[in-house]
Amino acid sequence: MPRLAAASLAGTAIEFYDFFVYGTAAALILGPLFFPTFSPLAGTLAAFGTFGVGFVARPLGSVLFGHIGDRRGRRPVLVVSLLLTGASTVAVGCLPTYDRIGAAAPLLLLVLRFLQGLGLGGEWGGAVLLTAEHAPADRRGLWSSFPQVGPAVGFVLANGVVLVLSATLTEAQFAQWGWRVPFWAAGVLAVLGLWLRSSLPESPRFLEIGEHARVPLAEVVRDHWRLVLLTAGGLAVGYAIFYTVTTWSLAYGTERLGVSRTVMLTCIMGAVVVKGALTPVAAMLGDRFGRRPLCLVGCAAAALWMMPMVALLATGAPLPMFLGFLGALLAFVTMFGVIAAYLPELYEPRVRCTGAAVGYNLGGVLGGALTPIVATALAEHSGRVPWGVGAYLTGIALLSLGCFALLPETRPVPVAAVRPVME
Image (cartoon, rainbow, N blue to C red; front, side, top):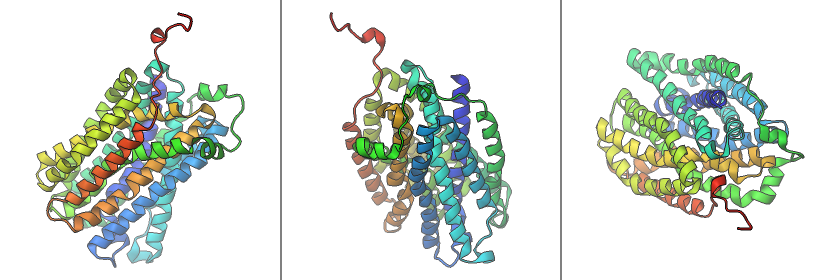
């Protein structure tokens, strides 16, 4: 289990590094480089639009790779998805900008972002299931949480590279070539990830399946459509919170509040580090008290904290901004710390890779794809404190709360707690 957990964590960290480095670049530099004929606001919105395309592609990736995972095994998914995401990320770093090839530049950027999302859509299901299906039932939440730590590690890596470049390069150097370096680094990380995953065993649950689903998506749509919609709606607030903190607030702080890029990145990264460290703690609580209760608590906390968070962000001061981000991500981790165990337990093994991944990535479309765009538009018509953004996020939190309230609990009952039927 430690070897499986470490390999899954490393793989998700690498793939989310690829995904997050694009989001950071979209907030800081891609607008003027690929959409120079737009106004600054329109350029930022256009860059966030290409950012959102990655989320639209993720459910498609979960269908494609979920089919492979349910038909051929969880392990092949990990290799192919990592190759696709890594190659497309490196290609972004090699892409000529608008001043070199004109309108072809944003078009190619859009295609590469789509391929990134396609690969990531397959990654989560394969990595989580390989760990969850090996784990003992009473510690499934804990072991399954390690792939969920990967996004935090990937985010810190991506933003750490950007932070170092921002501190050591001039604005002109960063705009000319510095922004490409984090994308090129993805190639090295992809090779490392493939090496780590080369010797992983196949999931025992997959090997036990007698008859594999011929068309897993068809079975999911026919038999589990309500479950997919509820899980997507429940997860929407987590995505909305995470990308508000890590992507939209970065653009808002640097462009509207005049806070330096270094300060914003440091505040966000500090909160994400704490979030990553507490993910296994939330997972252990899920093993002890159940998955659903923690999801309900996380949604309720998010609904209560969104208004204070935007007020703290609007101060532009490092400590209040950090506390605002930290409170939001604590609500986030309360939910997402148990999701890697919760979603697989909701679906039967023969369609688990497809069902869990589609529900997870549809939540990304609902909460992650549109949030930076909507928040940017709402903030443009607000005063210094973007109350509209807080109200929008609160509404999503309440929607997710309602969805989780309709889902069942799945935590396995300890053997000692089961009373004999005849007693």
